[in-house]
Image (tube, rainbow, N blue to C red):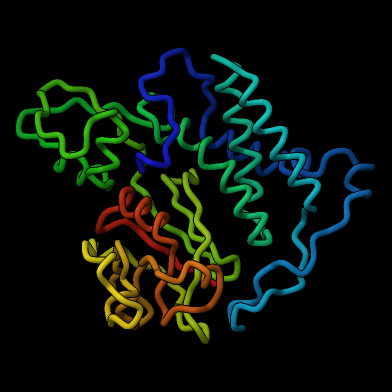
Length: 313
């Protein structure tokens, strides 16, 4: 998390407050205005074709279906979001961040070619870094006051987040031990949950209804990743990744393992990294959700056992 975060740790200033439901409603209702531009511009734009991943039942070959927006519309949305944020300060920046968040979520929740999804994700993560993953308290977080008998791990467990996320959110060194009674800590309002959309080859992390991260992923060959709802069972680190070869039977685990409880009468599935990043996106694993190493490391630093996971078609 820390290596990819650009949040304004400890920044002050009054936030531009907007209720969560209102912002999501704005993103949904105004998505057409945000993304499509004027009718004449929309008419002039050519639709994207030929770059979407194929249906989940196929072997990951690119499909030909076009999303609802064109490349030039995506270009315009990204330029406007990033330009508005870069040009703003104080309350105006807070508003630009929230407006930008609504526009980018509208894109990421819909169908996109993988190359365009990657571009939107690249713009989206810095926005969520500031709104959700910095040490700034706002309407997306709650304040917890440490009590006698508390520890950082106990508080993280109660909030349903990783210990690393707790320390990152509060601008504390990882491994911090000296919790003080009465210490104020920032916590998310809801624990993280993961939603995988197989057809779109993406995994999204939500706090409640708020998307905070999205990653491009691969899933199982021959549609071998079952759909359904489950929870995280166990998590582990592979400290010997650099010593493993391509033929090592556990090399596929790579760096991090986030195992899932039994669902749809199937077991043994989870999220992990790969030494074959070129296989992402696609239907290339034995059934697990395959992620780029840097992405699974970041995801590992957000979630913990017990968090909800949903795999969709």
